[in-house]
Structures are given as C-alpha cells and as structure tokens.
Image 1 (cartoon, rainbow, N blue to C red):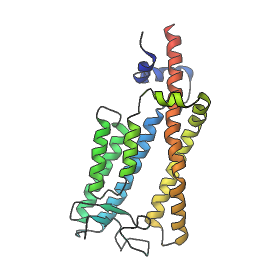
Image 2 (cartoon, rainbow, N blue to C red):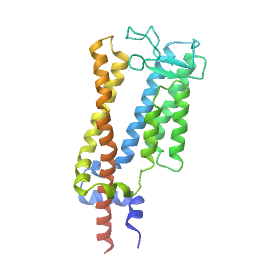
Image 3 (cartoon, rainbow, N blue to C red):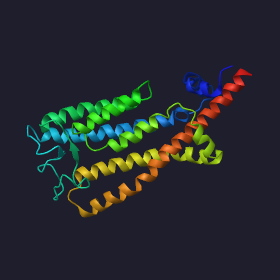
Image 4 (tube, helix red, strand yellow):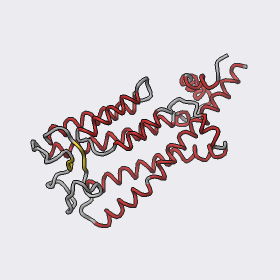
Length: 251
C-alpha cells in the first residue's frame, strides 16, 4: 500500500482525474507553492528585462563604475539623478564595460530566469540553476533583485513537499483561512509590484508619487507573507483532500 504523503508527491495525474470527476474548477487543484515561486521568478526576470531595455537605450557607452543607473539622464523622469538612490533611479551592477551589451545580456538572462522559474525550478537541481541564473542576472545589469531571488529559491525547495512543520504549527481553521486569502494576496502583490515598477520608472518627478512609492514598499510585506504561508496552507489542504479521496478509492 503506497504511503499517503508519497502518493501526494506523484499524484498530479490522479488529482486531475479527481477534479474532472467532481467537476471542480481548475484553480482549486493548482500547486499554490509553485505558483508563488513562479510569480516571484517572473517579477525578478521582468525587473531585469526592464533594466536591460533602458541600458540598451544608452548605447555603446562605457559605464563609469560597476554600479550603474540603468535609466540614463536622457530617459530619467526624476530630477534627482543619483545612482545610489534606488527610490529615484533604477540601479544595477555590471561587469560588462558597455551599456548596450549589458542590456542585451540582461534581457537574455532575465528572460531565462522567467522561463526557468515557471517551468523548471521544481525539477532536479532546478533551485541551484535558478540561483546561478539570478547571480548572472545581478552581474550583467539585471537590477538589484537578488534578495527576492533568494526568497524564491527557499520557497521552491518546498514545492511538492509534505510541509510537515507547517501542518503541526497551523491549526486546521488557520490553514483554511490562509488558503482563502492566498489567491487574493497574490493578486494584491502583483498589483503593488506593477505600481512600484511604474512609479520608479515613470514617476514624472512628482514628490507625492515618491512618497507613495515608500508607502507601497512598506506595506508590500503583508501580501508577500500571506502569499507564502497562504500558499503552504492551500497545498496542505489540497494534499489532505487528495489523501482522503485516495484512501476511499483504495478501500
């Protein structure tokens, strides 16, 4: 008789069959942890691709240092132009002594980060390859998102895992509540991320927008935490339901 937990880890096809039999919406059977990882990975890659685009616009120019502003003075909508102020400019590191080439490489590597986080990070050695791509992205002008990349990698190690610690520390009622909040926190986080990227790039030198950016950065931690823990709770409940159906089918 197969172990219930092991059955969860290899039972995606059976879960799909159960879903079809019970006529439940597709979203009720998705892997929440993997979705959170994909969302974070897309944000990392998108930030790098935006940085790469603005670096290309600066042309065949040699940077003055390893730390660069991806948005040059000609394209910046902020009057204060300081490469060390991440709230007013879009900064990065590059080991390539050319803005245009930096931008090309940043676009390619950042795109690979997105592809890998969506389709391959859950596979064997997937997390290590994702971290390697993220480090390369950091060094070729793909913006400062290494902190988010590390968080993404840590969460990715929990994909298709029993989540035993969370099972024992979260009550069933708490799991249910967090699971309900999970998709909404994901949507809220995505909206906040888009707003922050837009204000950082197209702020239009408006002081109120800069203040709004600081507020958004402060409150962004709430949906981020809810996404992670809520995603774990969602997957725990999904695993429990699957095990219950599996047990009934085996009896």
